[in-house]
Amino acid sequence: MLVSACLIGRECRYDAKHNLDRALERELAERGERAIAFCPEEHGGLGTPRPPAWIERESADAVLDGRARMVTNQGRDVTAEFVAGAQGALAACREHGILKAYLKERSPSCGACNTHVDGKLVPGPGLSTALLRRHGIEVEGVEGRRA
Ligand code: SF4
Image 1 (cartoon, rainbow, N blue to C red):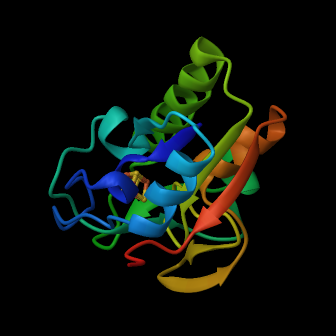
Image 2 (cartoon, rainbow, N blue to C red):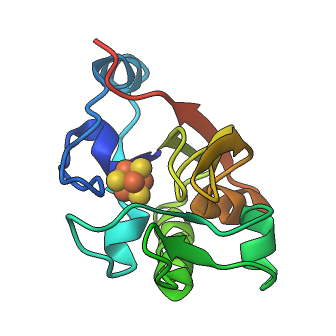
């Protein structure tokens, strides 16, 4: 399983905190599933801490199709870094034969059901989730920080 690194305790969020989710840890252990931790935004070279960022407009699919950008809260274009991160997530899945990922809800990279567009929380996936789904990888959203 590919798992958002922040969900298993890595301090890789934009604010250098984590989203350790003990319920997910237990679920994976009970099923004997091995977690491959991955942070698309660090992989893409954005560093930690980093400014918050979001999809500029429309959706993650619009970014993948070249119709929209990823931007920071100060308007810096970070599309290349986010796309590199998403491609890294896909490469990690292929390398390990992974067909399912548990990713952190609401993230502009990892969100599964909800993400941020133009600074607002909206329905729809983040960029990495959208790319993984285009390639047949199932993505389940995890809220994070569950006991
Ligand atoms: S939600 Fe995804 S991109 Fe954000 S810190 Fe966690 S693993 Fe990294």
